[in-house]
Length: 342
View 1 (tube, rainbow, N blue to C red):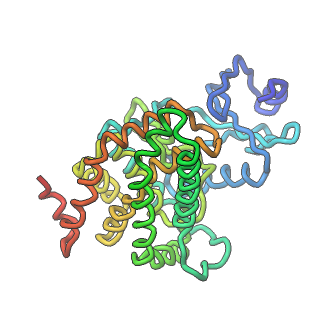
View 2 (view 1 turned 90 degrees about the horizontal axis):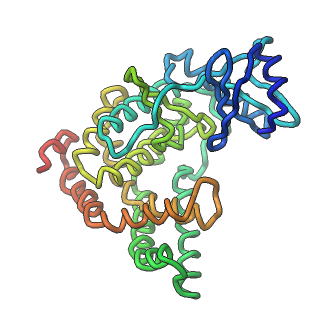
View 3 (view 1 turned 45 degrees about the vertical axis):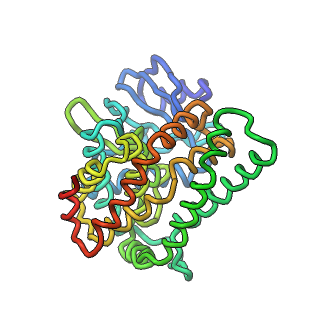
């Protein structure tokens, strides 16, 4: 952030700025009106979307999300030197920890409340003629990218520990990816997609643990509305469960408790729970991280990606056991049968 913006901010927001601290893609501001977060956008439309979305969610009762501060004219978008800035109140909380089951359950409940509020929004564009969810397009693209990476490694030979792991895991990862992509077309995903269009639902689409903040008073906030868009809310649950299960070492009991925490707020049918479990067969953790670092995407670093790959390799048998258990439990059984897993 260009610090020349500070005098303009002080004038527009009637405050004194005592310090600026960068973190990720935002900056923290220490002011005489409290601690704020400032974020810049290249397109005004994006800044308008997140501020209007936050207001709409709050009007629908979902207050545990970001809150934007208006300037002296009541505007929540502050243009400066070709960018569009928003100011948010800083939430006094820590990031959720997927290794902590109580944190996971709190986050699941918050996600459910967000999903309840994120309905009946205007639908943009027609229903896709092929009935194909965007999730499958993304997964197919990710798998194709991974296959190109593995071909390059095979061609030149592994150059480091990460590439050795990729080479070792490639065959099974590609097989699992292709298998679930083929099976997904036999699931009732088109019906789920149609319902999402009919209800005008929004999904967050980046339910990483760092986007859930837990306060000392026990509240949980869902932040970073930049990625929110029209979609099946099922995609959030698949992403959420996949991320947390890795840190929960693929314990079925953790999956059960997280699903129950969500369902206590927002009802899930047996069919939806079954689809979530089946879609977890896609090796998204591996493919996301590996394609992220080879695609030079922001936020992906060699050390972190290597650690995740090593963890997935170590928990390979646990993951397969978790996935196999569903075949028995869902065979003509209601969701309640999960409680009898030994």
